[in-house]
Amino acid sequence: MTTTMEAPTITAYQRFMDAKSSAPKATGRTVEMSEINPILHDWQKEIVKWAVETSRAAIWADTGLGKTFMAAEWSRLIGGTALTIAPLAVTQQTIRESAKLGITMTYVRDQSELTGTGQYITNYEMSERFNADALDAVVLDESSILKNSTGATRNQLIAQFQNVPHRLACTATPAPNDPEELTSQAEFLGRSTRVNMLAAYFVHDADGWRLKGHARLPMITWMATWALAIRTPSDMGYADGDYILPGLEIVPHLLDVNSAPDDQLFATDLGGVSGRAAIRKETLAARVGRAAELVASEPSEPWLIWCGLNDEAIALAKAIPGAVNVHGSMSPEEKAAALLGFADGDIQILITKPGIAAQGLNYQHCARMAFVGLSDSYEQYYQAIRRCYRYGQKRVVVANVILSNLEGQIARNIASKETQSKTITAALVDEMKKVRNHS
Image (cartoon, rainbow, N blue to C red):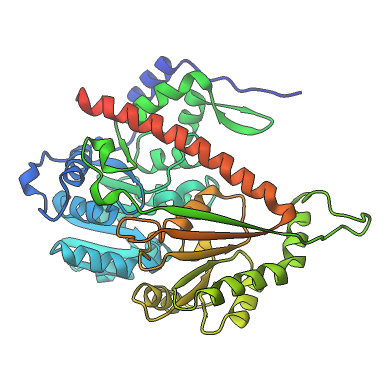
């Protein structure tokens, strides 16, 4: 029998949250547009102004919209000692981008390297080494790392920085209907606990937590007081201009490979996790072969090749001359050097996993990529695509998705999640426009 945990009324919950929240009540300071670096676009300045005044805010800006600029400027305007936490591969890129604003962003490994007020940056692996009491502000870059509600990293970050007065969470791919991500970001910012949010806006049944239909608008209205979502400048009332990208072409390659279980003559479906893994392993050679053919057909192009298994990465590196495989057993410094080497054009063909390089990196020089298999994660797929398909890209990006014929259902699942995400994000943007227009 399916049980459903119903929530209290939204109004009752709002009163409860307002009365019982023990989170710091610090507010930011009022800033004038003239105080913000003139390099930023006017719509970026508006976002920075709002985030500084909000103090504990989320910026959900799509890839290529300048989250690095906005977060660095937020840190400068907040003042004091501000620490940005980012994926290691992104830290050096953030330092480069901040320098364009005249901001010295210093990479630090532990508390002893904080030498006074200013802007500092570290990577998530080092974050536990810092005393939050010494900080005035903290920024989580690629804050979707908080998505795993039971993860040690998520719990550590929320607990460690809960008393820092000013907090900023930045990501390109929020999932406003995903309780794991939404509740984690809200809890990090001190806007609500996971338990209270689940009680107010979600129900639990045999399929897990899901957003209640009547709760969507009240939840988005509340979120709009501390989060801002933007897909293009026109969401802020500005012309899109160069943010209109030249195009994205998704090219599916469904390989006719039969991989039947021992008790079947023909394969009929993927089965469970073990069935998927078996099929992916048995079709590896065919998928790697197709990827190698694609790269060889355009030898002068930079290529970004995504895989999910170590065996895939090793086979791809053997099959594609000159390709560099950035893998999990490399040191953090080796990974960062190779990923920046691809960005700088020193490496022409990069092989890696979305879990390593799908967030925060700018690869606009590359317009060819291949997925040698897919997982069910829409977020990873979207982030991987947007490493190349982002502001500054001058050519049509061609993304080849190489799957066995049986894995077509994974592609359909990704497409369904994409449709759902776009619908929810559009509603969030519209509601946030109303909040801004009446504030």
